[in-house]
Length: 70
Image (cartoon, rainbow, N blue to C red; front, side, top):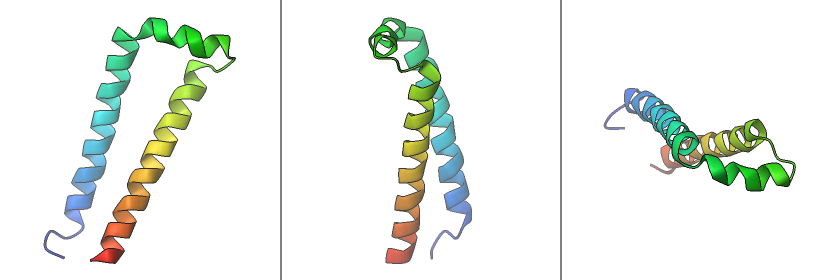
């Protein structure tokens, strides 16, 4: 592998940083859109946790697949 394992560490922390930026952006500018989900009985915490867990799981899965594909 050309870059080694260190590039995956940087990619992981970049992914975490972008998730934090997106979280603050959506909470700042899209507050009113949460009412739709609250009316359905879905809390903000549940909505964010499922989104972040799915996103990180997909990211890790794709990193592992690309590492094995080399």
